[in-house]
Image (tube, rainbow, N blue to C red; front, top):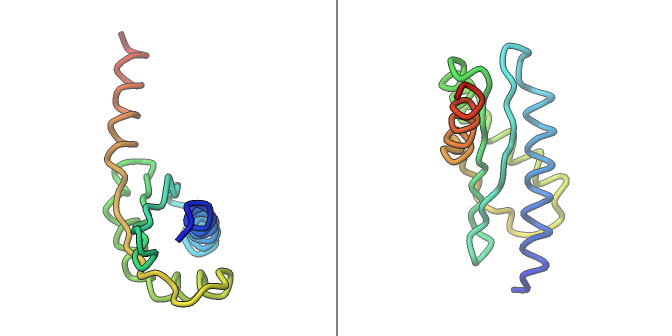
Length: 108
């Protein structure tokens, strides 16, 4: 499969996921889709998210996990490919580490 097509699918899943989360999540935390990792065969997509404030991370992760079925339906309506990749969600630890480094740099 072409690299261009995979990149296009990845970007589209990221946009659709962000729109769904923005629409469905409550105003208590800010959930950001940082990136999407697509498997080489385009059958699995891992949605990486970061949550602010950090204290709400567990609740936000639980919310997204509970609504993965609805998210998949939403993505399948906007993404005109078949089959739709299996969606997973994970907290983006790399983003958390970057934020922590920024905190330390601004303090020091």
